[in-house]
Image (cartoon, rainbow, N blue to C red):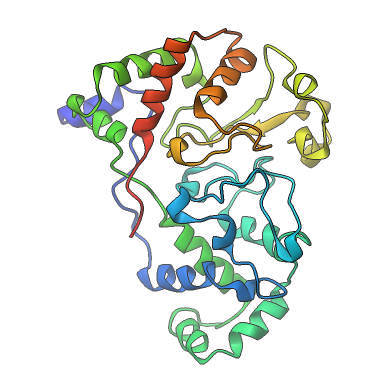
Length: 300
């Protein structure tokens, strides 16, 4: 085992792979579909409307806006590196990217469409007919559309962040302060939920372990119930999928409710409600400086 591999193996976090082996034809077709507003009922909203790659895979709104200007319940999670999540959506109601696509397509406040309508629109386009025939034996059918989009989304990884280079053995890629921030991130317990290749996205956790975040924030709504809406189990009330911290400096506002604009404020709130700590300004600053090293390279 090389020294670089050892460096990564000794860490609770794994670097993002530099590439994923995918069918490039499917990626290209999925890219086209991802950016095509024909997937929405009125032709006004595409997947890219809420997941803007240049903005970190989000729309930077507190809640996303769908057709007819309707507002959704949640802050849009980033599409970047979503292939590494063990489940999709804040409440983790589906496992795969293919399943996730059904959500916005059918939601009356997002795309408000259905697969027969979408397939009919795509079949009217000669280029789409040709591309699908070259890749899928059944041509333009819902499963083929889902698969193409999900394959494209799987390609949206952001490797080679400074932190990834650190994990691979380049200890000079982080400054002394950033390394101190990472050490505090581990020592204070952030790493217990934010680990693995995505620094999150691989478990569920209650929001408010050492305090009642929702009572303090006020105006509790259905979206705040988290996993409870899926399972109807009392133990899942206020439980959410732990979000990835990859590219976190670029994906404000934060939390499922999009209630916090500042990364420093988000760290402060996490310290209080998840760790039971009142973090000092200099501690927060060091952790934020570490989090800034998680910004990777956008896909071409």
